[in-house]
Each structure stands twice: as C-alpha cells, then as structure tokens.
Length: 358
Length: 247
Ligand SMILES: Cc1ncc(C[n+]2csc(CCOP(=O)(O)OP(=O)(O)O)c2C)c(N)n1
Ligand code: SF4
Ligand SMILES: [Mg+2]
Image (tube, rainbow over all chains, first blue to last red; front, top):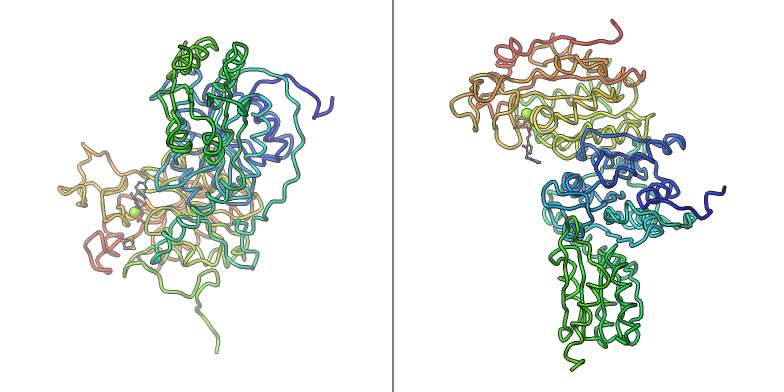
C-alpha cells in the first residue's frame, strides 16, 4: 500500500504521520492523555527512520530537549495537553526569545488544574496570547478534522522554519481521539531559509550564539519591534480561515476546532429552514484572520461565537469586526457532557433572528 | 625565546565581567585548555546556564546555546542527540544544577548522555546576590539564611559528585578545586579526562568545581580562596568518585 493512499486513522496518529512526512528529526515528549498516541506512534516509527525519540523526565525536560535540537538546526517537536503545556511555557518563551522554530501539539483537555480528558477550548488564551512570560506570540493552527490534523501539522513545520517562531497545533481530545479517513498528502516542497544561525560547532567559521538575553542599550526593545514586524508579516501572508455560506449570510456563526463541526451542522439545519446563516472558521488562531472578519462584518452585522469555554476567542472576534456588528456568544465550558448538540446551537441561532420573526 | 605560557586559543582575548578573585574565570580557562588539548573547539557546542556564567559565548570561541535556568542538561541532550558527532558540554552553577535543575541533571546522567557537565559550586546564588543555595554550608550566613544555614530547616548541602556517581549512566565523576597550584593541576587533569571521555564516546562525565565567590561571601579574594581549602574541601572532598575506565 502506498504511503499516500487513503487511510482510516485517529487524529493523533495523523499528527504523528504528518510529522514523519514533514521530516521531523527529533521528538521529545511525556505521556499525558489524550495525546499519548503521538509519542507511542513516534517511538515506534521515528527510530526506524534514523530519527531521535526520547521520553523525557517531564514536559520541562521535553521542551528543553526540543530547544537544544532546534538550536542545533533540526526539525524538532513535542506534544502534550493541559498541565503539560503549562509546564512547557518556560521553554516556549525561551524559544520565542531565541527565535527557534519547533512544533508543539496541544491536544486540549479540561482545566484548570488537573482537569479531565474531555474536549476543551479553554486554552485558547494560553495558546494565542503567549502563554509564558515576556510578550511574544507563537503560530497557532486549529484543525477541525483528522485530515487537517495531518495537513496543519505539516504546515506548522514549514511556517515555523520560515518565520523562526514556534508553531502550535491546537487540537482537542475529540480531534485527537476520533477516526476519519484521510489522504496522507505528500509534503509540499517549500522554499525554506537555510538555518545558518544554528549551533553546530563553528567549524572554524563565525561563532553562532542562540540566546534570548539582550542587555545592550536598546537591544531588547529592538528585538521586540523586530518580532512585532514579523508577526505582522505572518498575519499579512499566512492568515488562514474557511468560510461556508457567508456570501448572503444575515448571521455568521464563528467557531474553531471540533466546535466548528457541530456549528456547521447547525448552519445546515438553519439553512434548511430558510435562515440565511453562514460559518466563519479561523484556521490560524494566531495570526487571527482579523481582516477577513472585518470585511465580512461590513455586510453582515449579526454574529454568534461558539466555544467550549466561557468565552476567549470571542474577544478576538469583537476586536476584529466593525463596531456596529453585534456579537452574541454561546459557550459550554469544558467538562463531561458539555459538548453542545447541533439542535442546541440551532436554537441559539434562531434566537438571534427573534426580532425578525415577529 | 621559548614561549612557556599563553592564553588558550579557545578563549577570546577579552576582559571578563567576573569579580576579582572569582573562580569562574579559572574554570573557564581549564575548560578552554581541555578543548585546545583535543583540538575540539570548532566541533564544540556549549550550553550556558543562568547564573554568573551565562556569558559563555562572550569568552569562548565556540558555538553556544543559552538554556533556561537549570535546564542545560536537557538542552544539551537535545543538541547531542541531534548532533552525536559534536562535543557538547554544560556549564552550570550550584543553584542552577543542584536546585531548580535537579530533575534535568539526574535524568541526563541516568540516561548516560554523552555530554560533559561542568558544575561550579560556590555555595551560593552568585548572580542574584548571594542567597542560600542547596550547597550552602551548614551555618553559612547568606542573604536568605541570615542566622546561618540551619540544617534542621534546610537540610544538609548536596554532594552532587558523589550522588551522581551512584548512577550507572555516569562514566566519570570528580570534584576539583583551584585554590592552590596542586589542586589546579589536578583540576586540569580531571577536566581533560571529562572531555576525553566525550571525545572517545565513553559516556556522561561530571566535574564538580569548588569555587570562590568573594563578592557574596563578603571576603577579599585571598580570604575567599582560603575558605575553599579551610571550609569547603573538608565537607566536599576532592577526588574521583567514578571512573569507568578503572571499573
Ligand atoms: C526560573 C528562574 N528562577 C530564578 C531566576 C533567577 N536567577 C538567576 S541566576 C540564579 C542563580 C544563580 O546561581 P548559581 O546557579 O549558583 O550560579 P552562580 O551565579 O553562583 O555562578 C537565579 C536564581 C531565573 N533566571 N529563572
Ligand atoms: S558574584 Fe560571585 S560568582 Fe558571580 S562573578 Fe562575582 S564572584 Fe563570581
Ligand atoms: Mg553558585
């Protein structure tokens, strides 16, 4: 069977398969549900391909091994969930300050604290606003299918190398655990910059230093403005989103990840009853596709944001749309039994048309 | 005229920021001499830590990656696994390695990472102004042990070289000092051995370097140097605790 034939796999497996296709050279992780299929798969497959797999002593150990391997010029990756992602924040901050690429997969689970393993989107802020100290952002990609778990993992490696910004695939336990058929796409041949900054031993040439400490007068400030400009360039060139039935929409529902799948069913239910409803799904959560939201809200003034939290992405939606647009929010904070049904979402959609229905 | 003494080529010709009488400079020199001896500087990657030795790259002519506080052994693991043909070492203080970084050092050692670790024990957090470290001596007054380290409250100082020597993954573990010429010669030899182990791919090598921190000890350089011999060495004995070649 060819590598690129249709397969029926779990979301987490798709991530691991994509990482291999993307040429990941080093994986460092630590067990935590609902992402452990990723290290399990890679512990089996990566060494066969000459890559490195280490089960680290902790998520702190793992992210710092990623830091080291990335500093040495390798494609390096880690994955975790909730409590583990919190532990990685120190390393992510250092990597951001050191302009090191890497891929971090976060298969979100509940929180705060230990949390259970049901789906959650309550780590949106942690992921998109720079979860560690110092003021930085990372690339955040939000798949909503097993196919996208595959495709966006591959994209994460390329974007991260291109911009020298860590990239996160922000999934959730539904996406990690569910099975769908996918076509394992071949890695697109991207023109990527050579890593002439990596520490490989000077070989007698110039010294390379990977660091985040800038003490000279104005040096740190300059670094921040440089990164700010890079984030802007990223937003201009690589913001991604998906629109569904938005052209004539009088209400646009917006949701990311697994929630967007339920929302889409609700949109179809609404359409079949004659409501002009569309769906806007951000694929990049950082950069948030602000411009696309703004443009859509020039025409459509009714919005409904749906999240598995008490409301995080809705802040970005409200900041992006025109001020005269009305943004409703419907949230189901994470927990067993909190995944909304399409009927539930349809009811909320209808509620937004109340004034028109009299 | 025959030249009998020179600056190691692996060191840059610059002034350091170290305080007068600080032993970090001496250990930098011994590490550089070891790199010169094996001609490995161009293949070497240093993993700096957080502490007074954070500026490794400013003094060594080698590639350097800065690590978060305590994490250098994990960073070095990543570098070495990525580039097994290179020489990789960490240079860490006692707060860095024996407090916040215990998990990383113990596991890197236990995995038998083929790296060299230079652990500079000056019984205090130098960079942050002389607070109590896990290696602070019983009764030693620091800015966070104003009555002296109370072992009932804080436990006794860690003896890292002995502790690590108990792990099967450790190939070489020694404690050295530079408080007198004899000890300098022994330190030089041990540090060379620790790098030779890596050159010969023999496994994890650990050097605990007893060091003076005159500034935070509130001593002049001479008195601080003497304290190493009078107070530290009796508690932290010098010697080789593990040498795989002799097993
Ligand atoms: C996570 C974190 N906690 C605390 C600090 C502050 N800090 C900087 S250096 C240092 C200790 C340095 O002491 P040591 O490792 O003994 O090195 P020395 O300066 O004595 O050589 C600390 C606690 C930090 N940078 N990061
Ligand atoms: S504070 Fe102590 S360790 Fe730091 S440079 Fe000064 S003497 Fe050396
Ligand atoms: Mg110290």
